[in-house]
Amino acid sequence: MAQGVRGAPLRALADEEMAKVAGQDGVSFAAHIVINDPTLVGAVSDSRLSLGFAGADGHSRYLVLRNVRGTIDMSTVAIDVHTRADGGDYLALTLPNTVKFERFGFESMSVQNDPLAPVTASMGSLDITGTVNMTGQLHLWAH
Image (cartoon, rainbow, N blue to C red; front, side, top):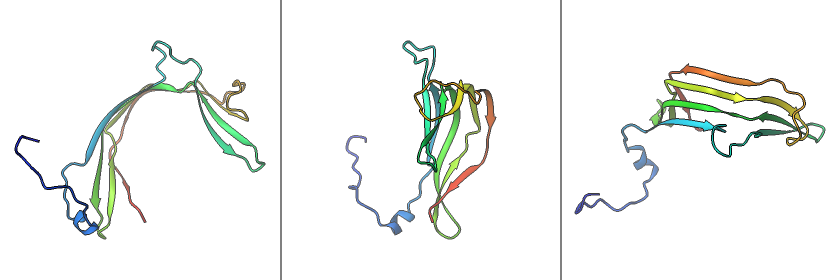
């Protein structure tokens, strides 16, 4: 704050008061996500992402993705609150115009009883390099 400028002290707002508050743009962000970059010093060469599922027989099975890696670039994603026609509020998530993938994927996918056991049977791999263009909004609200 500028020197000599004072604002009103903070206080809690009732729901009715909060509903009358108007904002400007919401929140916007862009992201550059790098997962398991093999060019870094000390990079891990055998990483796993495991999802466990309890079977009807009481034993767990695991979906194991080995060496998940790659880069994801997302242009602007916006989050804003809007009012529905019935007076309720909803959260609007604006999809990014462009999402770029660079060598994004995993080396193998397997289903195993032990997530740490060696991968013996791969169900395939995934390697995505390209651009996805998306437009629109995802609306979320409570019941």
